[in-house]
Length: 421
Image (cartoon, rainbow, N blue to C red; front, side, top):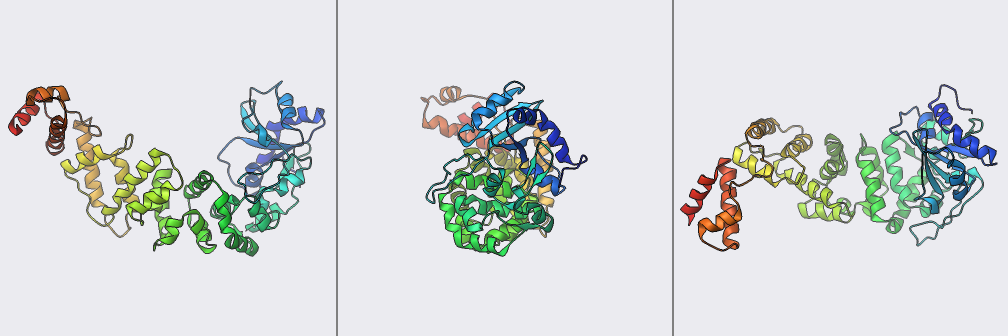
């Protein structure tokens, strides 16, 4: 087939035209690949405006050919054959055809450049991603039947699945994301290969696993992807703590969908049925950022209020606001709790807490990080002691008074300290 002038792919080809013309003059071919081809054929809107291209030109030639008209060039991926370029305000990633070889014990391929687009497409993860459009004439290159699989909602690998997954085991986890994203049904041989090869995930870096799981978690519907992970037993290899726990995994995914679409909320909702210790242990294994870990731990503390009444008195709200992580207002915890709480449990208490919290914010702007009206040196002078543990204990008492009664001035602080002396 040839790209229709009305197709979104026609816009991509037009944007790529300056690159194609430069490559054609130099005797090189250029092909549009990646999500834009798949998504256009699936009639799906794209969420990004960047384009991926593949060519028989080598990286150093790519740089030379785009240099005269590119606004910017970046070469961080050059050793893997990829050169980035900004042309007419749009970003392109241009990659030399690949024909990689893999060592079964290695996480990374031995990069081998190729000259044939069909060989390049053969090394891609699934047939629906193994399609290209020739920038010269707009003809679809589809050697593995990706368009037919896309129309039928079928997920297959271009090569035998055991070869594809042995080359890059992360593709097994990526299959779950594509099943959840597009509603694909994996062919039986793909399911069987994942069931037999899950232990190959051991050679994949935890960072790649974490990033792929996060992409899955952020989708509108996680259940089909997690059903695939459970049914193929791949869950044991990517989230062993969840797999080992006696929890309703699919129920946890439905709960996660109700949470906000940020990584911390989704991770916290997914892991909420685990104990606090197991929750953090499962997450720590994936090496997340410290901020993500702290936020997940904080949101997970809402588990005690899933069926209990959340307090709306001012002392409790002041303490809770001050205990929140930096840049995470207590309102976020209340929103999370309202989302993940069982539907049959009333949320009137959460609304009451929100209302009282709003009133507090109107009069106590330092609610998240309450200030004391006197500093440590003043406290030491009032108590007649040297700076040390006694001052720390006095600060703690003043903070408790602040939580219980709200803001107070320096005279009240001095009186409280003298009364305790």
